[in-house]
Image (cartoon, rainbow, N blue to C red; front, side):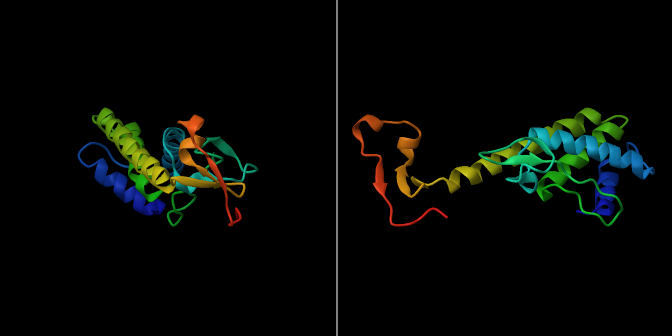
Length: 163
C-alpha cells in the first residue's frame, strides 16, 4: 500500500474521532514507531532476510533475521511491510492520533498481529515434512525432535543432494 493509500485508510479509521496529521514528518514518525512495534511483535515475511549485513531489528524464525524497514518518503512510496500487516500499522498510528478510541485501535492491532502470526506459523509448520533432507541424509522428523529415537533407524542415505 502506498503512503497515500495508508493516509486514506487512516482517515477512515479516525472518522468521527480525529483527523490524519497534515504534517507528513509527524505522520512518518508515527509510522516509524508503529512499524518498529510490528517488526518486534510479529513475523513480517517481507522483512525476513538471510543477509545479516543489513540493519537487523531482531532474529526471526530459523536462520532468518528481521531487517530494518524502509520509511516512505512521499505519497507514492509503498509501506515496507506485509500487506496483511498494513492494517496493524494503521491501527497503531490511529491509537496514537485518536482522541477517544486509542485503546480500541491498540486492542484491534494486537488481535490482528496474533492472527497474522498464527497464519505464518501455520505456513511454516505445513512446510515441515515428515522427513527432512539434512546434508544429503534423509532424517525422520521424529528423530530431529528427539522422539523415540532409541528404537528407530533414524537415517537413510539419500540419492538427492541438498541444494
